[in-house]
Image (tube, rainbow, N blue to C red; front, side, top):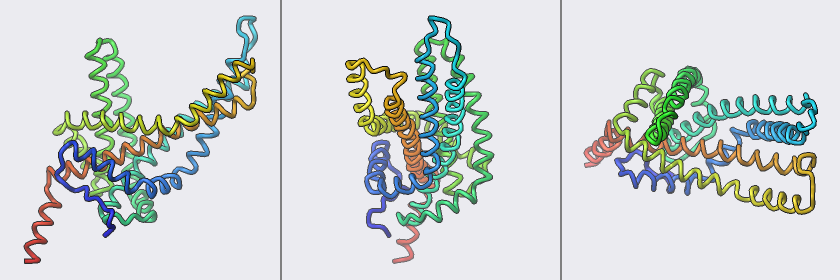
Length: 306
């Protein structure tokens, strides 16, 4: 067994679950990130292309002088539209990959007690691909329903906003726990979704608070990741304005903004993957609380040894 292995199948308190998440990242950050980069290599390249198209399109639109009735630049609008379409596809496909990859990673970590194997993770994703696709289609319907409900709640001051946050964390938990159920116990889509809903509803306030805390922690990680490019962009913009450089038509400015925007998108995508790691840890805790499988196994082993 890996000496740095952290047992996730335990009946922990809320604070212990958060602490386990940090310990997990501490011992697995390098291994997880290396595999993450391998699985998302194409997405990273597409993100850079998308960022370039969006930044080029936006800066092209910003450089137009509408005050004098100048016509729209078709190429500029095409860049912007193409970038927006690619961005949507990237977020959708990458979310699918990251939910699957992170869930498979945690499941493999627990099953083999810390001895991670990339081939097993990839095999697990392929074996559950049909179930994942069906769940994504169901999830798309849930997201549409969520958007309709949030639009209605937007008309209710304060309470509506709180309800929106609660609904957001609830939906995220259902998605995260269902994915873990698929990869951990190889349940069918119906059973996995049922378990995800059951865990979420029976531990509602705990899960909402967990989602809030993890969201804040991952936001801080995201801010840390993009802090360096943000500072560089800020310094560049300041001196460019002081030197009367036209940022909208500057090739170097386009390059700087492209890298900065790409860093923002990539940090968002990465923290999304980390959130699924957190829900994976939460899943094993809730599973043990309900079924008590691991503790019973340990007790049985003690009886055999005696």
